Each structure stands twice: as C-alpha cells, then as structure tokens.
Length: 212
Image: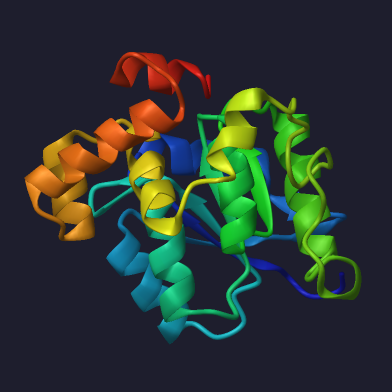
C-alpha cells in the first residue's frame, strides 16, 4: 500500500468518529485520509463527489436509516463501493446478512485499538478477497461466530421476512419498520407475528435474545 487510503467514516456520534480517527492514523506506515458523514444521505453524496474512496465504514443505526437497510441502500446507490459495517452488535444473523448483502468486513465498536487497526488493515489490503470472494467468517474482517439452530431456521425465511427481521433486531418499533419498508402497520404486524411463529419464540424480546 503506497498511497494514502481514503476511508469514509459514517457515524452519527462525533466522539466516536474522533476516537476512531485518533486510533487509526496510519496503515502499515501510510497515513489514512479520513472523510466523515453523520447520515446515510450525506455518505452517499460524499462517495459520489469524492473519487478514490477505498473503504466506507458504516454504522448500522443512523438518523436516516436503521439496521442493514443502510448497507442495502448504500450499495444500491454505489454497487462498486467497498463497505464495512461498524456496529456495537455482533448478532450472528446481522453479521452473516451483512456479508451476504455485500459488506467486505464487519468491525465491532467494542474492538480495542489493536483489533480496530488489524481489522482495517485486513480489509484495506484485501480489496476484493481471493478471486473476488468475500473474506470468510472467522477472519480479521468478519468475527468468528457459532452455528446455531436459530440461524438454520432463519436461512429458510424469504427476503421480506429477512428484511423485517433485520429491523426488529436493530431495535425498530413496528411503526419505524412500517416507515422504513413503506408497508402498512398491519402488514408489518403480520410479518412480525409470522417471524415469531417460524422461529418458535413467544415474544419480540425472546426473538431478539436468540441473536444476542
């Protein structure tokens, strides 16, 4: 890596952005050029306006996007962008779905400085994985996860159910899910009820606990 990597950090907490930039000032002796955004809309605009951004480090919960919707929307606008999720959650479903949606890495907000540096180095030095494939689960790019029966059942769900599940796990209310998906509130309630039934759980909190 001979030129300064450009990383767009998308997080709505200024102190978090300051901390990350202070923790990672260089990669393998090369200074990192940090760009910042505090909303998804601003991040999409900056990526379009600034050439040569090597990586987008994207928080999952922003003022204008919830859960993996932000990742999905960003990659719809910029399909060639290299986006790593930056999140406090390490829910198995969320991590795996982020990878399926096209994230090139998943960086925990709970990482210490060394772990954060190693994760970014791993992602930046492997632009597209081996022969275009994404890095596997259990590397510096993606945390190692257990295989659970809950995940096996999730794998059988359809895309709309998965979309609703992503939003439930990110803490969205039914009304927020309705707004994000443009589905009626009644339809959202039906989807949530069918998720509870499919995953054999008693309540929304029980559902969320499966992925903690």
